Image 1 (cartoon, each protein chain N blue to C red):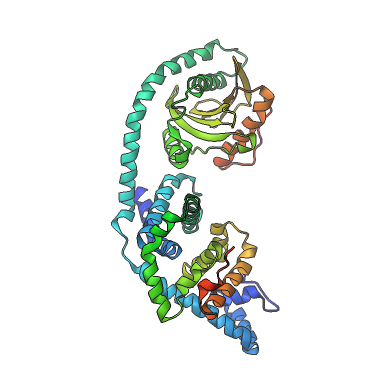
Image 2 (image 1 turned 60 degrees about the vertical axis):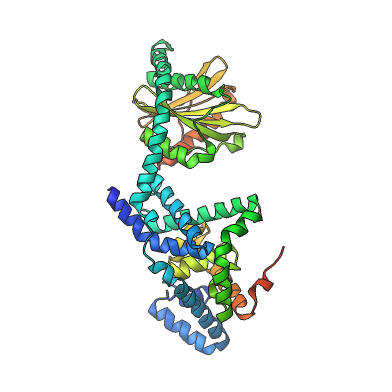
Length: 272
Length: 168
């Protein structure tokens, strides 16, 4: 950005001069300028000397050998150990949930034939998971939002897809955590949100074959769900909220998860 | 691939340790910060843009961890913070006796100015990279850098820096 500059000397030229980043020609111009303005030259040289001495003061730190605990291999194995412990505790939950999956899979055939099969599966799995866990008081989530980074890393790994937790604070919902679930093929992830009144909302993601679909709306009892399929994954947003209230939230989630996969250009298709 | 990853990351460790140490001025706390940074980098490796700038990315993670920890400490109260940073006090005073220590002087600056001086002046990040790390527009890097240097000069020239610190 300083390369193309011409004309009068600016403060940015002086900063780049101090940082030794000016192209030769410009550098000569700045030197001429400084020789004509001794006061400015004084402060520029001073700044340059502080820059140098800061560098010198910290050179020892830079030269130090890397301590063992910062070796990537050691950090990796520590991470692996903690992950392994976690997987053991999850195994039990997986077993318990297997039954729920069975019913979800069958429900896909019972639901209205006009809707695509896959969206139905996702919506139904999401609703089942929603019903199972939103009523939980003691353990609504497996990993709490305080460990959000760990939670998302873990779920992403199990899903085989980067997962983020969309920010729903503009709707009053805060992330409280999430859990890993078993789905038809492989893993599913549930993120749970709560608003100040204790209303809960879940985002459910599972690997699901099928072409892209528009938003589909499902209602089961008082639980509303918007579900869609996008590039090999099924998504569902479920809450005890009317359709018109849930739709903008689902759209926000759609966009957030879309951006996450690096494609921000597309817009959601019209909902059914 | 895993070993490429280790190699790429380890190459950056000396620079990360230097920046972390300049921020916290305590050897152990600095390495804690670097360790957290590396853990986060490993766990978010797939989120990094493949063609992106690894160096700027790592500095961004480290700085954000520092800022968050610092804020959390502030919230928790000053008591623990003083205990944590005690080891760094002695060398600071020692250095202060010899000459005005530029390292102590940058401690008087706001974090953003301090980081600018370190990332550009010491770590040799480009202005664009520094802008990305600090999440500020590239166009404002120069003016903020200029202000940081001016402030540093004041501390170095006008004697006892702590007296100039604003207590607001």
